[in-house]
Amino acid sequence: MNAQLSFDELGTPLRDTTFVVFDLETTGGSANDDAVTEIGAVKIRGGEVLGEFATLVDPERGIPPQVVALTGITQFMVTGAPRMDVVLPAFLEFAAGAVLVAHNSGFDVGFMKAACERHGYHWPKPSVVCTVRLARRVLSRDEAPSCRLGALAQLFGTATTPTHRALDDARATVEVLHRLLERVGPLGVQTLEELLAYLPEVTPQQRRKREMAAHLPHEPGVYLFRGPNEEVLYVGTASDLRKRVRQYFTASEGRARLREMVALAIRVDSISCAHSLEAEVRELRLLAAHKPAYNRRSKNPQNAWWLTLTEEAYPRLSMVREARTGALGPFRSRRAAETAADAVLEALPIRACTQRIPLKVQRGTPCALHELGRCAAPCAGKQTAVEYSPAVTALQELIAGRDVAPLHGLVAQLDSYATAHRFEEAAGRRDRMAALIRVLDRGQRLAALAELAELVAARPDGEGGWEFAVVRHGRLASAGVAKRGTRYLPIVDALVASAETVLPGEGPLRGATPEEASLVLRWLNRPGTRLVRCSAPWTSPAAAAGAWREWVELADAGRDQYREYDH
Image 1 (cartoon, rainbow, N blue to C red):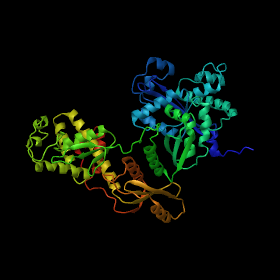
Image 2: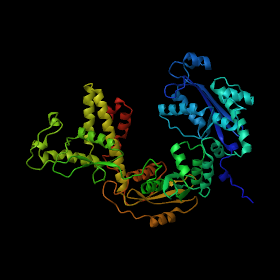
Image 3: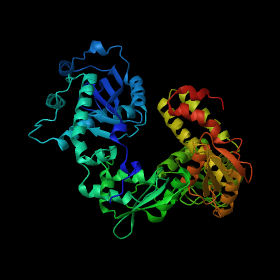
Image 4: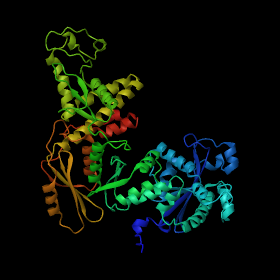
């Protein structure tokens, strides 16, 4: 006798799935070059209409005559209508948490993605059902020679006739969707996951591999796809391991690279974790250990760049991979390190040349920077080591967060350039200064965390319980949870007692990788986090770059108010 599947194994029933069926009218066919003139959407669940969304949109450009003839939307109609930057957040809120449906979804979703990118909104990556693709999967060529919306509406005898107006077309698409779902129901498509898997992009082989997720728990953790030789192909994290891995075997996984990975995989292993932070840290460590072929990020967590002062009579900036005590960083790329180095050289008279200058008997020739007044030419004996040392000390104090005088000097330079109407040069210096402040701020916050021998923190789990993390020198040493109603102090004691021993290393991060320390810091900084124990006060330097964050925000916005910012 066959065992009955649970609802979790079946997935999300279609009758319980919220769909937002939407349609756009636009000034043309290019998501990058054209604009939306009208949005219409219908929210449905279980055959019931939950709400509608409809508005004209000011495209802020002319509407071609052929488009006016097709849609009937004229320039007069959209004049005074809300612009896309106003309409977009309202639509995203209306569609939040729903499966998007559109007829020829690539067109409509493409415009919405482009609008999000243009106006600074995050595209939520919802599941998408295309009624054109579904119709071609369900209907034969004889039954439906054309899958245009008008042809399908006529075939199914919909109550709403498509008119090339957004809301009418969305309402017609709702009826077409329902009729298509009636066709796939007898074929065993009863859940959202099965509907997505039924679409053409998923091969029968991929659908069969869905059983590889059957043994996974409904818990947060890390999953590893393994290949024919037991090699790790891909590592990822999930708040629900079984649900996330099952998505790789449906059409919701649209990345060709990962579909190829799934075709190669023979097994999925998993590691259950206490909460999301533990899962993310374990993922980082597994990526570094296995370097999976199908992951694109974080395979070399130690490959950060740092700027450090050389050990010589006249120190200069050197770009290195290995963090040293007092180094500036971490930088994600060599280019970012070079930008910050340029800002340092603009702020302080640190020499830019790479030659080694002896303490005595300097016989070099002054370079062009000396002529420009940017270097005192210690190579030619025109500056003693004692005279050179204040610039070195100022940089060390800036990195340590004890003195931000060089930043004030940079602001004064920006004022002088602006006063002289050298705006392009001022903008370049402003951007380099902002990059320097960002890396100073990040490095100082990470270093302050890494300095702590032990920190125990707790976050609400959303269900009346707590998530715990034991952090030692910037690394996650232990993680656990206390369910609602459980005494948490014995759990904290057990987590501390069983936590990994972490011996501090060299450098600002005491041996922690920048990515892991950053993950931990983000978790600790989220609203609601509480400190349970700390081996020493967790502090930041009084003159830390964090006090300049508002300046950076103004500078990033390209505004002049940063010049009047009160530090």
